[in-house]
Length: 144
Image 1 (cartoon, rainbow, N blue to C red):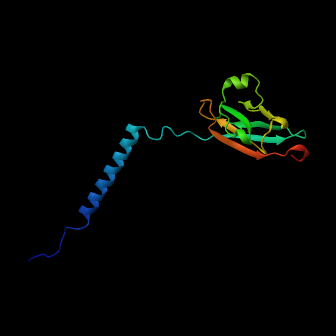
Image 2 (image 1 turned 180 degrees about the horizontal axis):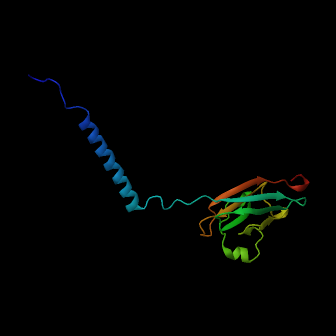
Image 3 (image 1 turned 90 degrees about the vertical axis):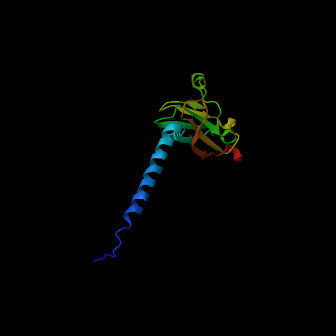
């Protein structure tokens, strides 16, 4: 009796595909470990800020919650990315820089050069503004 049924089927093809997939996954894992990919990713700022303008036109920003930000700065629209946010600014009673919950930052109306203010944050502690947390439009007195 002669059998004509072909037993060679799909199984070898599936086996090769699985071996290639496992090899690719292992190479990707090894490359991630060896080249340390993903280590430069910084976490986003996690804080809550309350910005208000008082009746004199002064703008105040209060830090309500802070989970991971080293330093905050209140800036006007022209200086939207404060370049220097180091601890010396906070120690010198700079009204535009703060670091802790409950701290208040102030820009007086005469110091405003634009119709918006922003709070920028230094998340990674390098003294540079990493992220804008919140922006808000402000109104000038006397129709300016």
